Length: 241
Image (tube, rainbow, N blue to C red; front, side):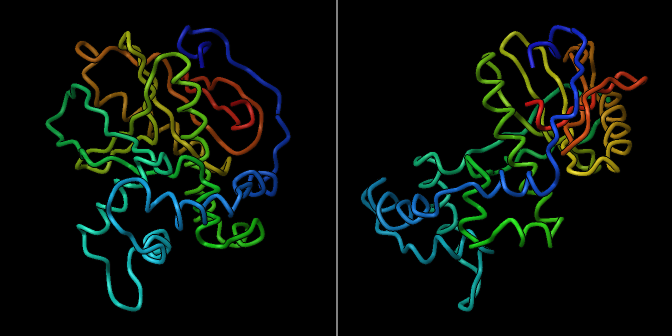
């Protein structure tokens, strides 16, 4: 991460993580911990009484046989889980834009570790490998977790970007001194080209006279070696993190 911000060469050999290895890493969780949160910690975080089963429902699909949960109930449970540091918000980034595109301000929410999501669903590595779309979402959370750890060591934060025209960036890493970099997260190597083009298009939207040029643009993927493309975008395997 420091090398990226300091414009140093960033290359690495293939760390050797196959998709089966990534599924195993995402699933490494103690289900007993999640049960502890549901049955004990959720009741102790404040004076409110909360139904552990509703937490399981919230984790599953914010619905159930009795219909959707009340938005106020959802907000209350989410706030409690944030206080317990089970969930972490990824706030929206607010750069200066060349265009008049309206920015989406809602945060993304991630479990502090994606394995908790897997535990909540009672899933396994084999199940993840049969649902690559879901595995892709969990892979994004895995990378966000690692980026947050690395950024915090540099006194930085992790944001996301989305505007009303559908331009999105999975992660914006911004340091306290104002330097920033943009990262797209893609499980499959076949998605790297589109992700890199998306980052280059995103850079054109930013008023770099007021927000600065990005220190780097990068695509984090599931496997392969690390290198810099001719267009300047870095490609980094998650194993390098």
